[in-house]
Amino acid sequence: MMCLAIPCKIEKVDGLEAIAAVAGVKRKVRLDLLSDVRPGDMVLVHSGFAIQKLRHEDAAEMIRTIVQVGEKAGW
Image 1 (cartoon, rainbow, N blue to C red):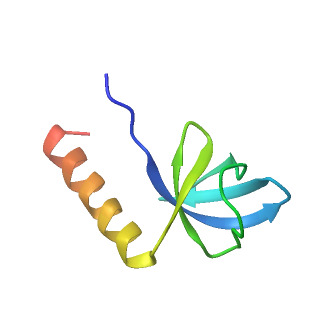
Image 2: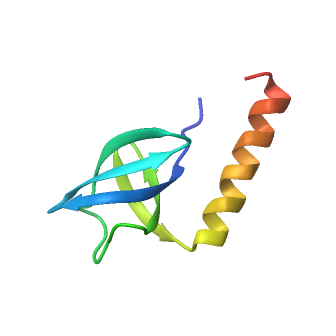
């Protein structure tokens, strides 16, 4: 089985916790591994942790790819 990190937009930051959203789904994520994360930033989330900040363009491309894979897989 393979793990997948998902690009998400940070909506709210409260210390080391944040609310991140993708495709209308909002989740609490931890910011322990990153510094200077602000609302509006795009981050890569894996296992509940934001692991990398992303450029908006890169995040959009990743989301498009995930959607295409899902469509081909019949999700």
